[in-house]
Image 1 (tube, one colour):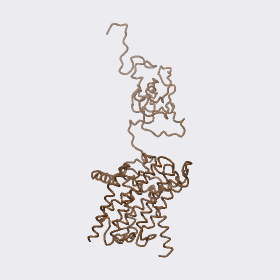
Image 2: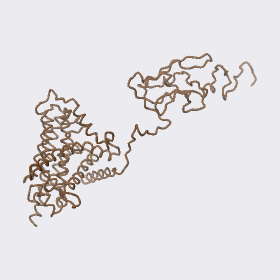
Image 3: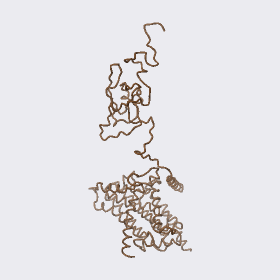
Amino acid sequence: MSVPTQLLIIFGTLFGAIGGASVLIWFERRLLGVWQDRKGPNRVGPLGIGIVVADMIKMFAKEDWVPPFSDKFVFIFAPTAVMMAMLLGFAVVPFAPSIHVIDLNIALLFFLGMTSLAVYSVLLGGLASNNKYALLGGLRAAAQMVSYEVFMGLSLMGVVMMTGSFSLVDIVEAQEERGWFVISQFLGFFVFIVAGLAESHRLPFDLPEAEHELVAGFHTEYSGMKFGMFMVGEYLGVLLISGMIVTIFFGGWLGPAFLPPIVWFFLKSSAFICFFVLMRAAIPRPRYDQLMSLGWKIMLPLTLINLMVTGAVLLWM
Amino acid sequence: MIEAVISQIRTTWHVLLHTFTKAETVQYPEEMPYLAPRYRGRIVLTRDPDGVERCVACNLCSVACPVDCIALQKTEDEEGRWYPEFFRINFSRCIMCGFCEEACPTYSIQLTPDFEMAEYDRQNMVYEKEHLLIDGQGKYPGYSFYRVAGKAIGGKDKGEAENENPPVDVHSLLP
């Protein structure tokens, strides 16, 4: 691949991801409006899409306050960490047969590692704020994300066993002959989607920020663009998890030939973004202990059963 | 556990079905919502069919008002009619409860279906009689207190009101 195309893909992915995340600000509100029988933002620009710009102006114009009692360096570093980790995660997503920033042979591990690094952002943000609500939020985030990470990784191992590779391109290509992994690895898919929700700490698993009990959780003390980075990071997480679900379980770019592969990828991803918003519209937030017991008592055994059955079937075949 | 999962899936499905229902939103400034005639909004003072103000300055509205936003002073004209010298409603206090309307014995004070009273200056929320008084009769057309009341005013003596018998002559024994 030539250097200009490579650069084009890199910057395309970078700006596409950030642009997509900011459009998601508007898209989510509109979609929530549809499901809650109201209109959502519809004043600025066609269908209200100007709210993205309005929101950005608002964020930049707000007082960017660093609390004097906070741990300043960590406080400023925390919101950048989530952006960096999530954007690095996009590097391994294969959008189409040759459109990907890099085809690592450990892409899946790289993705899991990057989502794990995003925990630091929430954790450090909560810790550096020196505020009890933020600390409680950070505490919850750490426990929730670390424990859901365990079986998020394990749920993908069935796919890895069937493919025999950690490379996402290989995984997508394997689905061409085996069929989408959502059928053969349904348990894995189910666990991954729940863990993905928890990992991007979106509703219904938004306990780290639980606004009715923790003010705003880990980002209580954040304002202006620092808060904006947390928000964009969260939306980037949604995009990344949707992209990964599509890549791993729904055949990535595969689809009937009347549309180009990249369009199939984006169509499938949008369906999962809608699903994320639907979860927010429909499911109430569980209690913290319910969340943990769901994780360790149900999700982890399910993943292990899935892993054992997959292994047994592969050995027997 | 299984029940809980089914319940969650059912909820999600029902929320998804809302994709096909219409939004309840009324796009307010462009699209005005229907307000019933008995909607409790801005307060007005009405006039009787002769065009004279109905208020007799009895102070009952002021007494009924739970937030004490009505202030008035009674005075009398040369015919013996009572009317308020000033009538002042502080709408920044008013809670549109309608107690004044219920208390009013002459149907004078009435609430209207209008709520667009926003002001930049708080002082402008205090309405004087000239702002409150309207030319019409409001919700009770044809009613005039002095025509049915026994009180004697100029041009109408005792016993001359509608449905009123002449006064009994207490010095006569005849029935």
